[in-house]
Length: 235
Image (tube, rainbow, N blue to C red; front, side):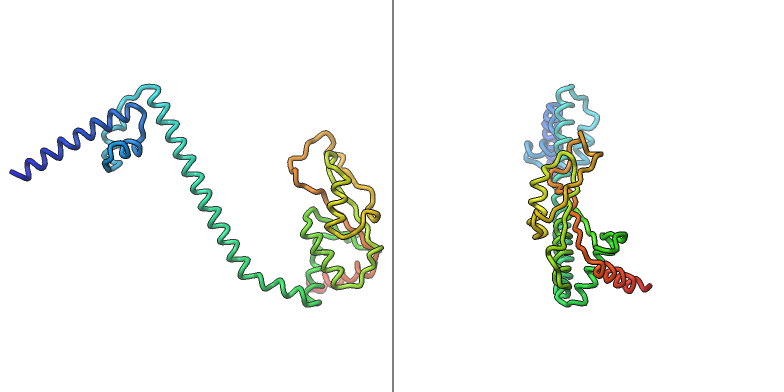
């Protein structure tokens, strides 16, 4: 008998909860909001049976749609943040595994190999009386010049620089930037080369500094890089 009364009481209790849930749903409340307001955990499968086919007013439907979109956006942000954190940890792990490699550049032979590879991949192979190397990444330019100045006795007066940029960029500021980056004085800069295709177009990369092209008058260096490249490629 006690068991029967318990069952009846439970049915009445759930019946009251169901009525309250339906009332809240008709006001446009989501399943999560309904559970929070009722202070009772109702399985989502049960809520779905109660509410899925319940007719709603236009305003209630609109509120539900907005709430669901907000929930999806929140979930997307959380997922993005989680992926970003995982990526940061992943990259930090790769960095720690390889950080010791930087010390190898202190060895002249390794530094020469890296320098030659940089030139073979990014430098000009046409002007054989000099070397010409260009890049838009300041770090690549710094690395190239640091290795060049470390591996060889360099006559700084033989350097020339050319800034290759867009029409809407401030050339004096770019030349000042690249002069600081390369440690080559402005007096050794050729006239900047402006891409004619960029005239009348606004740059979509506000931090773009153009391309810095470095010329150094030495046929001997050109052939040294050329021969080291051949050796590395097994030719």
